Length: 106
Image (cartoon, rainbow, N blue to C red; front, side, top):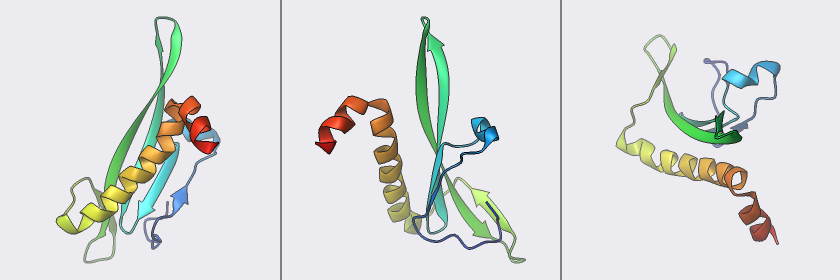
C-alpha cells in the first residue's frame, strides 16, 4: 500500500499475488486504522490445520507528512477498532466454521 495515499474509510484489500504467503490474506481499513488477517498452516498429529491471527495498526503522519505505523491507539480510535474487529471476525468465522456459515445462509 502506498504510504502517501489517503486511505478511504472501510476499504477492503485482498492479496492474490504469488508472494501472498508472507502477506495477510485480507486487510480492512477504517479511517487511519487497519486490521490484517493472517493464516498459518500447521500439521498436528498428521492433520493440516489453519490458524488465523489478526494484527491492528494505526497510520499517522509526521510533520513532514511521512507515514508511520503504530500498534498503540487512543480513545478516539476505539470505535474504528471495534468495527474492524467485527469485520475480521465476520471474515474468519466462516473459514473456521463453514458448516455454520452454510446454515446461516439458508
